[in-house]
Amino acid sequence: MSSARALSRTGRELLARHFAGQAGTVRLLAGLVLLGTVCSQHPSPAFSRVLRLDVLNVVFPNWRFFAPNPAQHDLQFYCRTLDEAGRTSEWFPVEVIQGRTPRQILWFPERRAEKAVFDLATEVLRHLDKGLSRAGTLPGYRMLRAYFEAGIARSGAAAVKGFQFTLVRNAGYDDAEEPEILFVSPYTPMRGRVAAAAEGGRA
Image 1 (cartoon, rainbow, N blue to C red):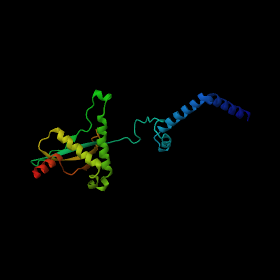
Image 2: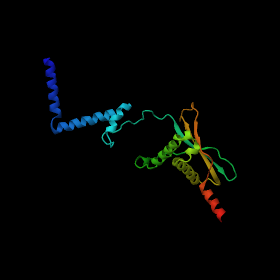
Image 3: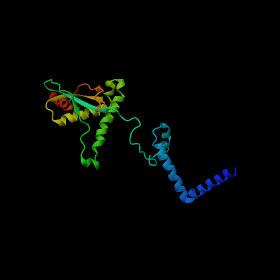
């Protein structure tokens, strides 16, 4: 019994020595921040309550470099065009992610645009269960359509009057898994040609 009281007294003395006064308060706060940071890195949803305590997201840093369920597939866009003679091109890949350059280590605003394209595609995919006619009315779909149309116009392709685009999911370098077509857009006329035709009709 006396040994238990002595151990308890020793514990109180240690706490008083290390956590008394202003320096002790700083040590206590630093310890709580360290404990909260360690807990917030845990992938279990139970530890998400710790992150909710940090309303402004400034106290507990997030050092989880990988998602709990990492992506196992790549998304790839393809396009095909229709020319004035009625010939349809083969499907060709659209390289949304461009090659990297050394200056992007310091300055890389294009990365936001690349991510935005895939975020828009994700928005469309979330609504595909309601049919492409519903998904086609989304702002995200219209922005994707404008993105591919602008890319075709910049490529200088001659006599293109319309196009289609599709989104394919594949396993990257794993050739054992067949690519999966997620959606195919309907035929879309080039708006520049539609506007020119309208102007001609009014003339």
